[in-house]
Image (tube, rainbow, N blue to C red; front, side, top):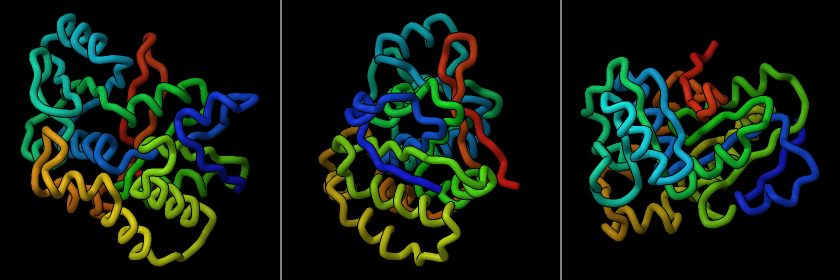
Length: 228
């Protein structure tokens, strides 16, 4: 399996749309998405902008809208796994807009397969890639223009697992724990956070499903994909 690791800006330099893209946002978009599904959400709509998220919420008041940062009018929740883990989302549609994670998924929306991932769904994601048995995979490292160590370490770990490596996860998790994002969350620099967010983002294989994003009625929609 051929692999490459690109930041969101690097996607613009590609000559063609990736066939398979794995969009990685550990802290916190796709940890939050996984928790939303664990709390019963049916699907997650990845919004293009805050205004689009508000508009979707206005058209569908029963949907649950969440964003990065502090609480804001038009949004029900913030992008924090610690704050989301007790939410009741059975059968609900969630609208998610984040600074990097949702942007990365929308940047590769024309790929044949788009997987969204963090450590909490690493093995299930790798299993889908192994099942494809070949081809190239583009890992979209969303944080810090492709240099965020929490996202890059997760992408590298998933790539290794997909290639059949029995690599120890501990060094990859350690890199993520020492990343700038983890430090900012732990120090309270980022608004809309919970003290447990870092630990929750580093729970390896907490959930038994992968997450697949695909176009539905002009929207990019994320759904859980059970591991086989």
